[in-house]
Length: 115
Image 1 (cartoon, rainbow, N blue to C red):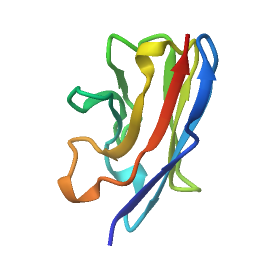
Image 2: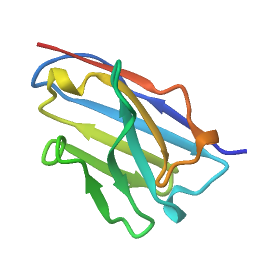
Image 3: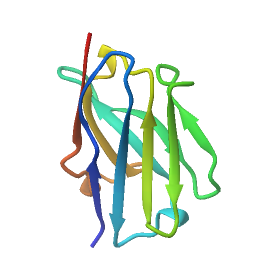
């Protein structure tokens, strides 16, 4: 049974930083592409960053240069370091495979950036 559990969200001021963590069980993240997604109120879920099995990383234009996705093969986790946060980054953040599986969505972690 695959489970992806997100943590690390919180309330931060504009310009601040947060580090999100995704702990995987039932699957080896080093063998699959993994993405961080977010969904803001009233908006569709979007992919913000991904890392392939070959460690190729991709970012949405809106976060490029501010967010960094990384993987720890020993801990079987994927992290998202978020710097220079903006109010428009406020959303619930989720991790999933990339492409995602509908049955793998977790509870997500709330990120709120105040201006």
